[in-house]
Length: 143
Image (cartoon, rainbow, N blue to C red):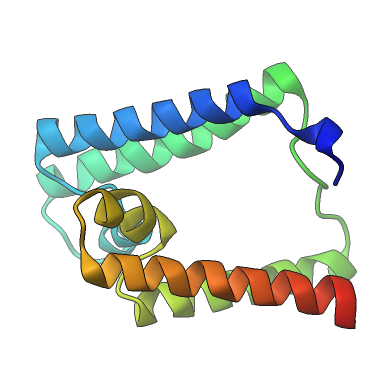
């Protein structure tokens, strides 16, 4: 990746929209926008009224990606064939395991927890980031 791929304005706008959505969910519903927790609750047993807002939020995440791709083109490499599918599935399983182990995901801890000065979320986010740094170093420089 070169500095030519640096896009500060879209990145800042994206961050602003994420922050605004987190704030609106907290003010409007009194809920934290942790995506893994939302998904886990939707797949589990919840009363219909408590499930609907989670489905809308998760649907909005998917719809946002679809709309962006429709107007700006595909984002990142598209998966094709078993050679690219199994690492993605393994990665998804490891992320799922990690979110259970950390009792939340990057959105819950990194965006909502840190903004509430939660020590647990700060430690979890530092762990996520350190794992990412180590993974990138190993993949790019050692493998």
